[in-house]
Amino acid sequence: MKNFKGYLFIFIGLFIILFTLMSCKNGSTSSGNCPSVKTFQKNLDTLLPGIKIEKIEKSPIHGLCEVIVKLSEVKKGLIYTDSKGKYIITGNIIDIKNKKNLTRNKLEEINKRIANHEVLSKLDSLVDMVYGNSPNVVYLITDPLCPFCYKAEKIVDQLVKEGKLKVKVILIPLEKLHPGSTKVCVSLICDKKGYSDLLAKYESSNQCNVGKEKVNKNFNYILKDLKIYAVPTFVFPDGEIKSGVLSPKYILNKFNKKENKKLSQK
Image 1: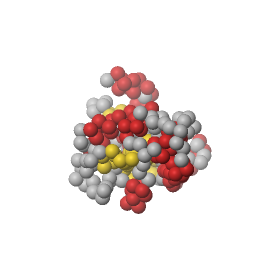
Image 2: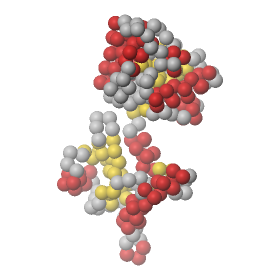
Image 3: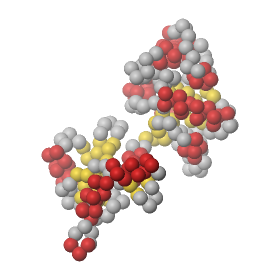
């Protein structure tokens, strides 16, 4: 609740603008129409040249439009405008009654990435260690010295111990962020260590060429080909690629959906 109140104070200015846009003579609201991409792109170029608009659609707030912009090859952003495209509004829309951040939810939706069968097969060939016997299988792309990765690894460890999950680990050392992680990854691969050793940040003097080549192979495919730049990253059987420390509930819910496509994990 404390965090939620913080959101309200931070974005109170946004709500003032929203209500201003919604109000007009006799208390009626605007038509709810949105400007065309072409029209608003011209307006946006005068202020933020180089930002490409991908789509404009109605927002949950009547009279306000969502503008989806391309930030990079794999990343999208979200801003808002009025029905005439005269104003740019940035910030979060909070649903007070349901205590939901609608902007954050929309960003998660538009940035959702799905791996196809070819990518999943390639990931399977890159697996460095397997832990667990459950039919519920997830890929975990991790850096042994990343503190957020460790949190994710501990959550996965508990789910595996409860018999609810099986994890296939792909090691990615982000050396510039976590100095020494390359040596740890190579040690784990060369000495054929397992998940408990990953948690213990196992390191040895065994820096075999096979391990070094494998780490480079992982790095090149994950970062250069898939353009996954964050760890930890989970890849689920339905192809969803999601970075960050995920809750046990989120992870297990992925396997409770009947529509998830079942892939061969043996």
